Picture 1 (cartoon, helix red, strand yellow):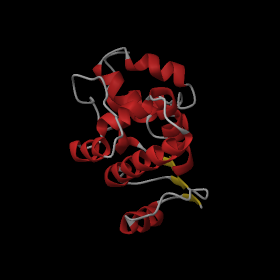
Picture 2 (spheres, helix red, strand yellow):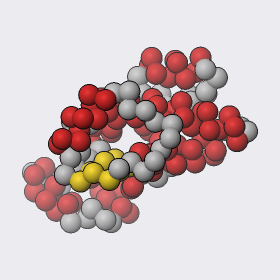
Picture 3 (cartoon, one colour):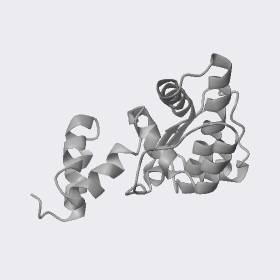
Picture 4 (cartoon, rainbow, N blue to C red):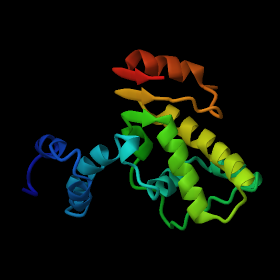
Length: 171
């Protein structure tokens, strides 16, 4: 099966969409399997684990990382190489709330900070992650946004474009 073309692998892996453990195993077979399965694993923010956010943070631009660091938010990621993929571009189902809660959880585990500082830090990182997602996602199937008070759609043109392309929107 390792000699199957990418489109055949994609058809097979689509049936594994809800089987994260198997898709994670597929990442390890070879480069082609990795390229096909990573797109499915990263398409829905509900599937993201807290560790996925260290990868998303690693995908932030140098400018974004520098701004966060200047504001006292230490987001250094122990990685010698840049990420293998543009993970943000694979997202097709975006839950703003899920992203917020996972960033908050990631920051709680990474740093010991006060509750007030945690909220400010989460908000700042959330802004950078959302900006990156908005710049990288070409089309959405679903945008889920349930009263997240800190996010302002300062990239309103992106929001309008995505909302027109989306199949399902929950606001």
